[in-house]
Image 1 (cartoon, rainbow, N blue to C red):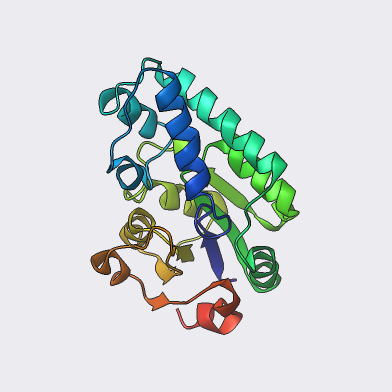
Image 2 (cartoon, one colour; image 1 turned 120 degrees about the horizontal axis):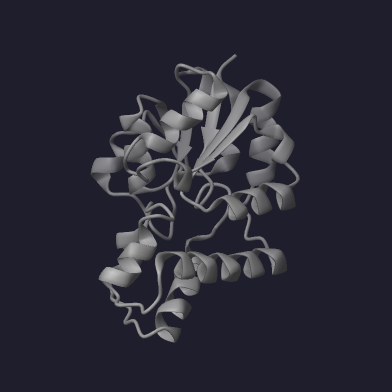
Length: 213
């Protein structure tokens, strides 16, 4: 059976602005200074990597663990208040799960992944989910997709991605890549060129599109 691996942020949830504000608040509250490039610099970074960036580049006066704890707590509060699902997200997951085995490969922390899928009501539709905090390197390295394949017992899969780092990660893992570009943080032309198919939105993600791969 064909395997489909979803990204989370920017594909199922419109989350980048929430991440951005949560990190900005921690930087402001703990002696750091936000820069114009910080948002794009951290796109795709794992939860092992972006706290180091906050310390080394933005001069936040906390440890990696303290930063993670503070930002994740803020994210969970926001998501529990209102989950910013992208249009068609739940329906796309259900549609793909009816036809294929599903996995998820995300840069989000494990508590965030679990909360989002639970709130969506689709946690049981995924055979395996992987956070990049559970592998050595975050996106654009292929590690998170390689681990997802391992947990799924699959040799290859179709990846659904939106961002520069995500597209590069899935391509580096040798996957068939479907791009649904994030309108707020669109991928570069070079990264988008790595995709096998580009779709305008989740409604266009159909069984037939996946089977082309």
